[in-house]
Image (cartoon, rainbow, N blue to C red; front, side):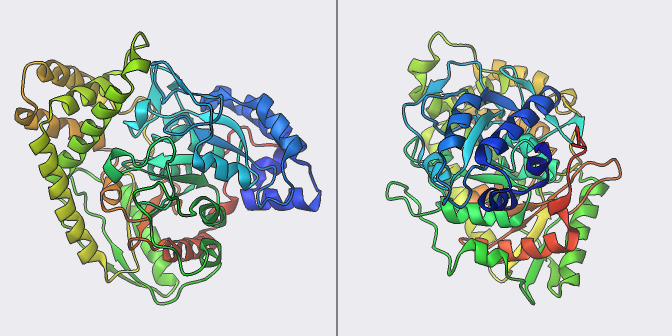
Length: 493
C-alpha cells in the first residue's frame, strides 16, 4: 500500500481512489506510515496532523477531483483552523480559527492535509535550516540541502510521503526547492492565487504561492482549482483562454525560446548548471522550437533594491506582529539583521527602490515580449551540502552588519549590504527577477548530476501566460520522463 502513494502523482492516486483500488483511509494510513519512516532522515515536518487527516479521509467527498489525496501545507504565511503556524521561527506561533482561502480550495478539491512542512525562518533564506526545527535534508542525498524556503514541502514530495505540497515564493522559494529535489515548481503570475484573508499581498506584490509536484499535469490541474478570482485581492491575473489542464495536454509547435544563462550578479556558475541549461535548450530544439541566446537589463543594483524591499516588508510585518512577539523566542540572526535594516531604511530611499524596480521590470517585459518562454537557471550550483552557506562567512558578516546597523544610517551601509547579497545569493542568482516582474516561471527537473543530485532549470513566461509554460513543460516532461523518477531514500520493495 505504501508503494501506491510513493509511486503515484496526485492525478494517478486520485484515479486509484475513484476506481476503488484503494480507499482514502487506506491511502492516508500509507502516507502516515511513509512519513514516520522517512522523516527521521529528512526532518521535513513542522506539525503532524495525523488525527485530523484520518478523520477527514473518512469523510472526504468522493466526487472531488483529488478526493482523499494527502498533501502538506507549508508552515508559513497561511492559516489552517486550529493548527500552529510557526513561520519556521522560535517566536510564538500563530493559531488561527479559520482556514485561508487557499486551504479552503485545497479541501474543496478533496486534498487532505497530513502535516505542515518546514521552512526557513519567515521565508528569508533559500535553504531550510532553522534554529526552531533544525536542518531539512534532501531525499536524494541526506547530506545535501533541499533549498528554501519551501524546503520541507519539496522534501516530503520527493521522499514519497505526499504527491503534492503547498509552497510559496518571494525570491525563488518554490523554484529553488523544486530544482534541488527533482520536482516541478510553478510560481504563478502575480495575482493568480490569493493570500486572503491572512493578507492581501505579500512583500509589496513580490510573493506568490502554489504547490510543488512530481508532474506537470498535477501542477496545472491544481492551479485550475486554486486560482479562481478573489474579490479581496489587489491583483487579478488575466484569465486563461482555456484551462491549465488543457494546456498541459497540448504539445506546442514552433515556439520562440530565449536562453539567459548569464549571472546577473556576475558570480560563478557551475559547469553542472550550464549542462542543465544546455540540456533544456537541446530538448527544446529537438521538439522543433527556435532557441536563441538573449540578455536581460538586470544589474547588481537590482538585487540591492530587492533586498531593501524585502527588509522593509519584513520590518513592517514584525511591527504588526509585535504583540505576538513579546515574550516569545528570539528571532534568528538573518531575521534580526533584515528587520533592523528595514527599520532604518528611509521612506524616500524605499520609494526610490520601488520606482527603480518598476523601471527594470518595464525593460525586462519589453525585452522578452517576443519570446514564448525564456529558459534560465534556478540554482548556480548543484544542491549544497547541508550548512554549505555558512562557511562562506554569512554568519560573521551578519554579526558585523547587525553591529553596524545600530550605529550607521542604512543609506551608508551599501558596501556591507552588497557583500551580504553576494554571500546570500551566490547559490541562486535568477529567481528574484520574476518575483519583481510578476511573470510566471516553472522549475523543471531536466538534469541529474553525476553524483545523483537533481538540478532543475526554469522556464519564464509572459505575464499571465502559464498556459504556454505548462504546454512546454509537459512536452519536456515527455522527453525526459521525470514523472517516474524517484529519490532512492528507503525505496519501497
